[in-house]
Amino acid sequence: MTSCWHEEADTRMVVHVLHAWESDYKAIQIRSVDTDVLVIFIGKFHQILERYPDSNISVALGFGKDFKIYPLNTVCEKVGLSRSRCLHLFHALTGSDTSAFVNKGKVTAWHAWDLCPELTQTFHYLCEHPFIEVDTDSLYFRTVERFTVKLYDRTCASESVNEARLEIFLRTASSLDRLPPTQDSLYQHFLRAVYQAGVWLTSGNSRCPPSPDGFGWIKDDSSSIWRPVWITLQVVSQACRELIKCCCKKSCAHCKCAKSSLPGTSLCKCQCKT
Image 1: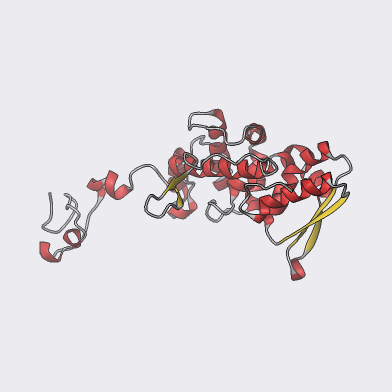
Image 2: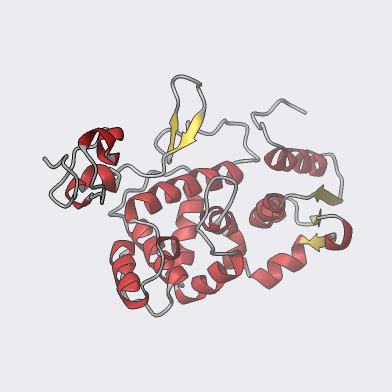
């Protein structure tokens, strides 16, 4: 076999499976405990089938009482051709090793997909154009926004996650971790999902994927480690200082504002008011 760029076993397995088919193996079983491997091969199965019509591939997943063998022909038939082709992006968007929605599992996300059928066309386009750059004004991101709203509240009619956050909070007084993410943080998560799905989609290619820079990741200059970009907006404590207050009634030397090097505001009861 020729050398490849893959650093992780889940994508390297695709290279080995393709090599096995080129070596005239007719039945292949992949053994793993990683759900990503099953998703990768479900998404790529139809491509493999086009090149090797006699493909007989199964994935043996889990261990102990959770061990199960998944014949890809059967799985793809049950999932459906349309969804199985873009399962990479669905899996990356709804929760993978990079980031995920809080308290929202795959079953909830699958049902939310039923309420947002236009998401399938968006997924197809993004899967056909891996690593494509998408901005917040594009139809594709707006569709993902609508899907995210349905993921958190099926009855919410808002098109924007920012509007949905306000509507859901006023209606239910939910805690912040039960609200949809802000548009800015959702966009960064969306970029990471697009990049992750692109890596899975091109796992059978010899070309290396592009740099993750600009896809929700930033490189730490001091450690040369790629770190996720969670948000690009200022945090509330910096953007809305006029809303900060403390209830300290002590002198400035003992005030929490002074100890934190924060200027007092007109709402503060201490003597550090600006």
